[in-house]
Length: 177
Figure 1 (cartoon, helix red, strand yellow):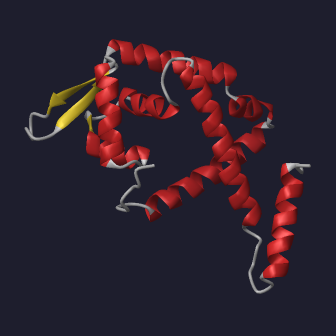
Figure 2: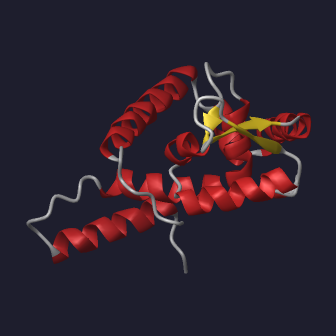
């Protein structure tokens, strides 16, 4: 019979502490919870995005294009923002362009490159997705139930971890996952 998440974690941590007594297993809880919660959140966000006919990866790409920026984004910018390979991005961009959600325009300063822009249809999809996520996402519901101090601490800690990991992965080729 499956155990509750914390019991499962403790059993795994205890097992590996016995198997490898010289190993510090203190980080197991954080690593396992982040990995599992991340997977559950991604699955839930994908479920919500599918109601609009797209994946959450598509929504994330379009949302990145929709932000106010000093300059338009190119595909190379998005590979770093989204942590995906050029191959994954070009396939996704082509499909979203075909669906009329974004357009590619040749750059004025480099005729080999393209800038990506949301269409009105793409902006509407992003607004719809944001409203659906706000009303249906399990992570949003859980976050709202946390005390203000806990929300702030969680956001701060995850933000710091994200900043550090982002620095650690700069320039690392992204897989096609």
